[in-house]
Length: 211
Image 1 (tube, rainbow, N blue to C red):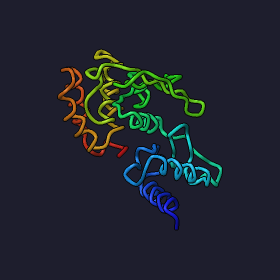
Image 2: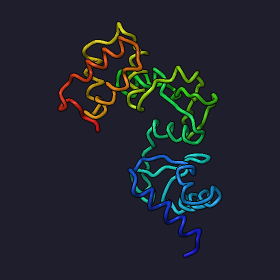
Image 3: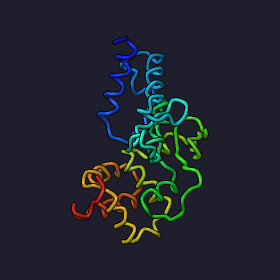
């Protein structure tokens, strides 16, 4: 086995050990070899239909085998996270994007918008255009991605629109672990958001549907 084949095998072994639907970049494998070698290995895996190339430096391990001809699109948050890793920046969904992700708004943003402490840019992935909008680091919510999504959605809706139905909908989207993390992250939020988070976390563990 050549060195290139060995690197390719190591990369694909790591990919297969992860979850299907994952989006990744060459940077995720630079501990295995040089950037040039990683790029070549990923390109070969894509040509062999083991993975799917989404765009420059972005690859997807689909939930179904590409050879079957059925490839569900990757999750938008997965793509956004990979774009952030590409540039070493932090991101969080915009308020409208976050509300839609949590089922709190039926309006589907034409373009997924994410806030970033990096530069503003637009990235086309297939037919979808991702908008990365620069904000000051202090304006990005602190905490896990799920916590940031909840905080952004609540701020987007506003205090007056947050009723028991909204709280229940958010609760149903969070596992017990996510709710516990949400409470910890809420200490960085405004008073009314923190109080709403405590209401969300008061639900019993059986209310959670997603892990």
